[in-house]
Length: 295
Ligand code: GUN
Image 1 (cartoon, protein in one colour):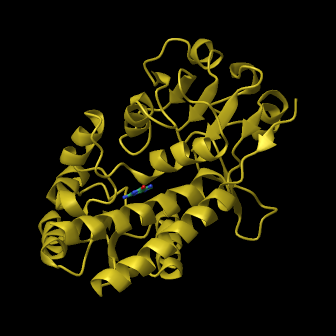
Image 2 (cartoon, protein in one colour):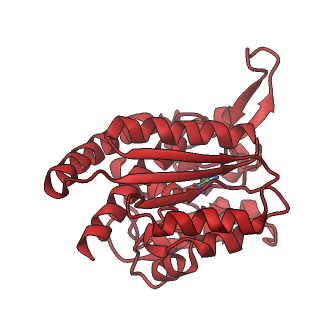
């Protein structure tokens, strides 16, 4: 079997069009522009590159965007004050503190300081709790993007055996909550594998839909995949590659070549989940702006 390649850029572009139309309508109706502020601390090259992508996407769909950059010498107190200032600014509908933060900062405390109504990352305990209870307000963008891709691919998720490898706060945990809910693109039977799992392959070989989100290249090898499974690769890692001009290439968690021979469909890295993360962030920002005017 040669797997169908799921084109994240194409799905993301359709979502961008929807958001652009929603933003135009919002402007007409409320004479205001939805706004996202990103807080970027330190000089992690991958984080800088992700934030650039977010800025560009906002500009394309008409969302006002600003990035507050600071070097890693910033104190916890100063960072919390920045967040509190954004909470109080009515022009700011969405706040995103790019993660990971430098080691001396307490990321959880910073996320907890964000007004939950502006938490477009869906990481504040109030939003994470609402998602767990099946009453989502803001769900994290990457899980939303994965779900949207599966819906667009007409993957029947009701009753599907889904195995998620990785239990991070940004992906594995919220994706589990999303796919457990009743409704379109969900209602699945979800298993989560992690570093405590005894035999990950035994679990993944049962998966109709296998979602890899560990950030470790080579986590999923061909022998771990059930023939005909749908593979979603959330991992993005930089590996050294002297043949590339920039000296590295991006790779996912899955052995793409091998998996393509066994799976029925697979997301590439890059060009799979990554573009979807950005588009679902835009959806969340527009949603935040709509919630702000409805209050
Ligand atoms: N770092 C990598 N992905 C994300 C994300 O979705 N949100 C935030 N805040 N930081 C990230």
